Length: 94
Image (cartoon, rainbow, N blue to C red; front, side, top):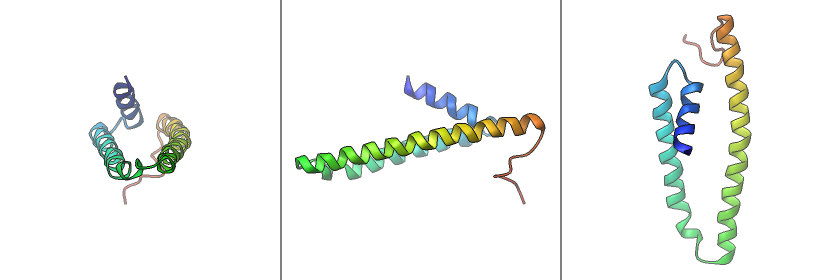
């Protein structure tokens, strides 16, 4: 269920460049799996290290929520600009 919702969100956020959006999704998914694979095995030896692992997960979850709200605001502004016929001010070709 998560995967289909996540892909639909990426498709909505990048309507003009879906191939790049899905490539970015795969890169983010693989990168997060690699970080977990490399970081978490060395942190499971003691009870204190488990707290470090839990704190890392909680902090990354909080950062993700803040970034999600920012992404939705940017996407809404981008939709409004596209309806007005304006180009994206963040990404302009030289």
